Amino acid sequence: MRALVLGGTGWLGRAIVRDLLEDGVEVTCLARGATGDVPHGARLVRTDRRADGAYEPVRGAWDEVVELSSDPDLVRPALDALADSAAHWTLVSTTSVYARNDEPGADETAEVVEPVDLTQYADAKVAAERSSADRLGSRLLVARPGLIVGPGDPSDRFGYWPARLNRPGPVLVPTSEGRSVQVIDVADLAAWVGRAWRTGHTGVVNAVGEVVPMRDFFRLAVEATGFDGELVEVEDDVLLSHDVQYWAGPRSLPLWLPHSDAALMHRSARAFRDAGGRSRPLAETLAGVLDDERDRGVERPRWAGLGVDEEAAVLAAVR
Image (cartoon, rainbow, N blue to C red; front, side):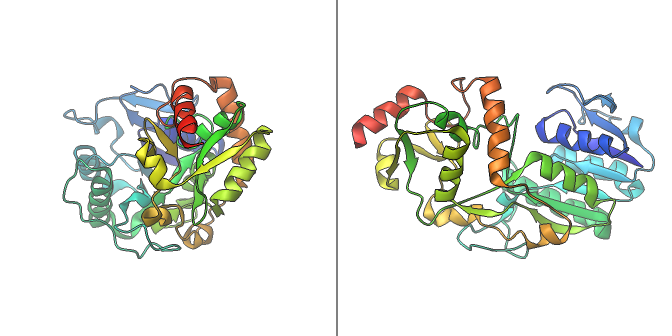
């Protein structure tokens, strides 16, 4: 079995490649290699996908092609060059394509955004889905992951919490009532992508884990870290008044969403389970992420979350 991964040097791409290799698949990766090398055993064709002739070295029959990009300048030329000779194609999309996030339990039939501005992530992913469907028809699997987490995650959206609870002192948290956490471990997502094409799965699938109430998420994180301090719950309007941001990025409380968007973390996982998808217990993911955070340094600079001084200043103001 031969698989071509368009990418394969980033976090998710490497996880997919490793899983394919473990199952005895012959894997070729087409990428610039700017984010690193490919896992041992895979072949890297190093090229800029925007360059003329970029796909010439990988033309031919493939049992599987995995596309990780949403950039129209990458997606469409790849389809032109490779779609006709691919037995199966997996496009990794995202649950961010949905137009509404106020419908808990919504499935793959929910309305998606219209791709008006392709510089926007969701718009570009919808455009990638549509152009892929036009070219591949029934050979296409569109995987729409939710929030991908696990060891090595560069976004800090999940790892912030076990890292923060690994340190002493009161911890600033959003109110948990009416909120949930729904994640997919990168290893579970990679394993499913690797299996799905061999079992003939196509169509659109929300690749999401189980929905866990946010209060239970914090309880599990406390248990994983052994934290014995206080969780200080603060209302949304107060957090916003102190310039604390939702979801991700600087000065944020990761995983915190406006109530109007709470269903972003509450999508139906039925199609994923029916397609053979499995998600490990959240406690297991938290334990693995905690080990990784300790290895990388729990006080390292982060892409998301509150810094030590930032959190202390907000706590001092609200208590």
